[in-house]
Every structure is written in structure tokens, then in C-alpha cells.
Image 1: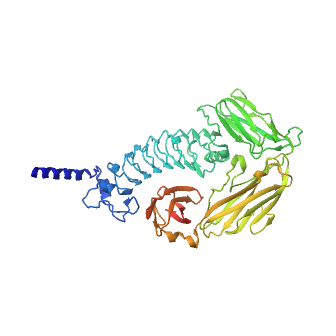
Image 2: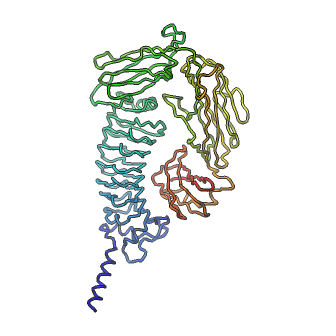
Image 3: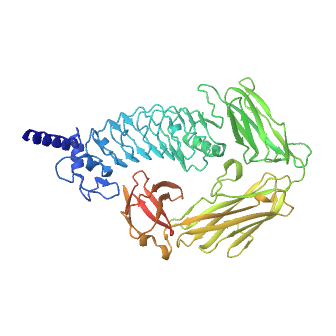
Length: 592
């Protein structure tokens, strides 16, 4: 019987020791043992920092590790993270400024955010981390990185490494990519339709493909790449890209939308003018030009697009091959273009190759169109940034204004005159200013008279709305362009939109943010905590930047305290928006 009791005791003891995690790195273990309530090292899965070694046995057990949702290990002289695999519920890991050479996240199925910058990493295993949303690997010694199996990765930072190739095409949900200071010779982000920020400065780039159909990119840069020869882009961005090329001092870099670059081949130019034969007596240099006319360029396998500029001229830079250039009228019923297309063959044909086109009306068609667009950009096809109902209006403490443009265009064959009317909900508007000044104005409407709007011509009106900033509401506005002659297609003569407005004075007295939540700390560097004060059904938390762009969505986990990791956000002001069953609550916070 004594032997049996001894064996049982030994088994129980062995079982207990089996739950203790082995940490070969003494500094890693010491950091974990130092975690106490309030010192910000270990946070629970429901938020709030806590003492990790709960039983004070000088060890970290699996049961204790499973309680951890966030670890802050910054600047702890850690070289080895062996043992981290036992933290199966961890969602945020900050291990920056250590001595790590290997980072393996393959066992952490719930990991969402990682800061591992400023280490000595030569190997990173993140492929298959399906929950991963953000990772910072800046300033390490990586020569490669495998990115498959990351369906939720929105932001990747790998600046200042030694990476020679990057398959970014698999990051279909990415909105931000930082890859400055590497050894990349080419970069293709054409699959990243949500990308709004790209930093690829100081590489060895020869070609760059940013043709992804996203015309609202708010920031990208590619300076410090003197070997850059070719950029494939959406034609809507040609002007912006070409201005960047000039800014960076690149003298031998070309842009088109074919995406068929061949290293070592020369570039050749096709140019010409688009003339409008309004009198139907044949085109000559006295005729008006046709701006914003679309062209397609086909080389037998790839198709590209470009538009004539404000002076009615077009320009293609292309490499060796046979190309067919085809002008595309706004409405083929209205216009005939001659010649219908031209074919060039480089290098056999002389370059630059010049070919003009003549646009002739097919009859009398009175056709105007109108749209709203972001402030500071041109209208309709070639550089259009249209705004729609899902475009939020975000106001700041020191700027309660929202500016946009009304564009109206003559799509028809006849010169037009008429009136443009703009109406708006003035309940929260304190002032409206416009350029040009309105012909007539009331408390909730403005109108302008216009004359001699020629075919293909687009004009614009800058509108600046000053809001009271009191509360959050939906703002409705509408605009109609009315010609003096009978309109052929009136369906596009009116635009009406409703936008969600949120601001610094963020809530109505009936649904004050502070009535429902305590938010702390604010400002914050790493974590923003939201503590629920009243019972309310919550669906989600969403963070917006000051441009009204969604930068982070956090699901509600049915807990009283929600901790949001904001380490990946740039320094500045943000809005947190909370959707509930009673109202929508919004508050401003500052990321330091």
C-alpha cells in the first residue's frame, strides 16, 4: 500500500511539473515573472494588466499563460522566445528592441498584432497566422519573408531589412505596406485593392506596379530608387505619379497602364491631339480640343488606358512591339472619331510617333452630367475621386469644415447654357462658402447660372461647409444641373447623397459617450481601454483617422472592458465609433 501511495504521489508531482513552461532565456522568464497588476507587462484576454505568476511559485504554468491576451516585452534583452507557444490565447505581442534572431508565430492561432521591430531577426514564421492583422518587423536582418495564409493582414511594416523579393500579391486585405530600405528590384501590389498607403523608398527598384483600381490612396512614396525605369498605374493616377517622378528627380522613368515591362528595352512615344469638328467642316488647328477623351492601347496581350489632357493632347510611353491605339468616345451614338484606330510598331516606326484624331458630332444631343468629388481633384473619367453615401465626414476640434467639389460636364454635341442648383440640410450648418460665388443663395440652397459650356468641357464649384460640431447626424445634400435646351438623358443630371457626420463634440445630450463608457488612457501610446458603464448592446468598435478613413475594426467580445491595441497607428488624432442598439457613440482620442 505504501508503494502504491508513493507511485501515486510521484505521478501527481510529475503531472504538476509537466504544466510548468520551460523558458531557456532567463531574461524572458524574468520579464514574465515581473508582471504585476498595473505595470503593463501582461494583460488578460478581457483587458487589464495582472500578476502572471498567480501562485508565487517562481514559475509560469500553462494555465497562467492561457489567461494572457497581450504581452509587452519591449527592451528586455531577450534573445529567445521559446515557451511563447504556450500562450495560446495571446492576441497582441510587443517584443521590439530585444536581441531576437528567430520569431515563430505558427503555434499562436489567435495572434492579431505583433511589434517585433529593432531586433536581429533573420527568420520569421508567420505564414498561416489567419488572425494576424498587423505586424511590424522594421530594422531587422531579414533577407526574405513568406506571406501566404494571412487573409486578415491589413498592415505590414518591414522597413530597413535586406529583403530582395516580396510577394505582396497574397496580401489581398492590406491597406498599408511599408517596405523602405530593402533590396527590392521590383514590387507588384496590383492585387491590393484596399491599399491606401505604400512606402517603398530607398530600394533598388527597376519596376513598380501600383495598378490596383484604388484611386483614393492617401499616401505612397518611392523616393531613393534612382534605378526605377517603369511604373504601371491606373490612368487616374498618371498625373500624381508623374509629379512624383519629377519631384524625385528621375529622368528616365516611364508610366503607363499596360503592366508589360521588359527590363533593358527602350521606351518610345506616341503623341497627338484630339480636335473637335463642331462645324462638321473637317478638323484643323482652329478647332476646339477634346479633353478627357479615353484611349485604349493594346499590344496583343495587354490592354492599357490613358486620357487626353486639358489641352486635348495624349501621350503614351511604350516598349518594343505592335500596338493598336483606339480612341473611345464618351458616347459612340453622339460622336464619330477618325481614324477609328491606328497601329504602330516599335522600334521599326519612327519615334516619337504623332497621330491626331478628329471627333465629329453625329447630330444634336443635349446631354449634361453632374457629380460630387473630393476637394482638390479633377472631375469625371481621368482623375475622378467621386464621393458617395458611404463617405463619412470627420470634423476636427480646430476645423469644423468639410470641402468638396461639384463637377458638371457637357457630354453632348452642342454648346450648353443653364443653371446648377445645390440644396442641403442646414440644421447643423453655420456657413457655406463657394468658389465661384453663387448667383443666388437662401438658407439651404444655392444656384449658379452658366453659359457656353462646350462639348467635353467640365467645370467645377468648390463648396466649403462649416458645421456646428454639435453631435452626430446624417447630412443630406443634392445638386441638379438644368440645361436651357431639352435634356437627352436627364437621369445623370441630379445627384443626392447622405453622409454620416461625426466630430469632436460627439454626441447628443440623450446619448452622451461618457454616459456609457469610460475611455482611458487618453492620450495613449499602446492600449486604449473602453470600460462599459451601462448595459447596452454593442455590435462593433471602429477607429477612423481624421480623413474619415476606417483604419481598424474591433469585434465586441461581450466583456465589460475592451482593450484596443493602437501601437500600429501613427501619431495623431483618431475617432472611435461604437455601434449599439440604441445609438452610435463616437469619441476622439490621441495616439502618442
